[in-house]
Image (cartoon, rainbow, N blue to C red; front, side, top):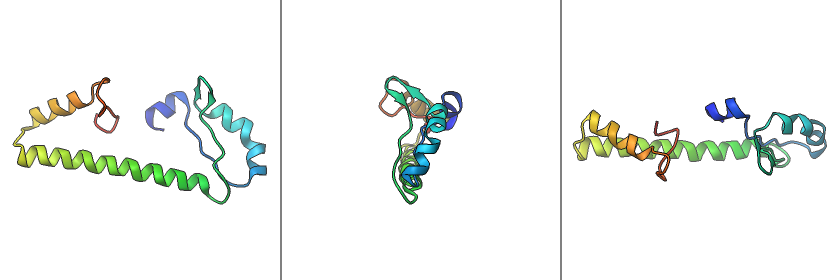
Length: 106
């Protein structure tokens, strides 16, 4: 998703009937992002399973955003960091080699 999905194709998690998926599978796999072992697409299951997977993904992402905002608040109010120090801290956290690196920290 996001800008990477727009540039390289999305990761797709369709649900619904297996028969319907087989009909649209060639289109889904062509549109999806491509990696070394094939398209980033997988049939998830019947009855809204794809929507369920997306909901879980969004819940994890929103949890990450909450943690980032709480870290900012703690560093600002308890740690006493000013805006320049906060920006430097988040820039350090977002370096490619950092395990905290994320488009959410940009």
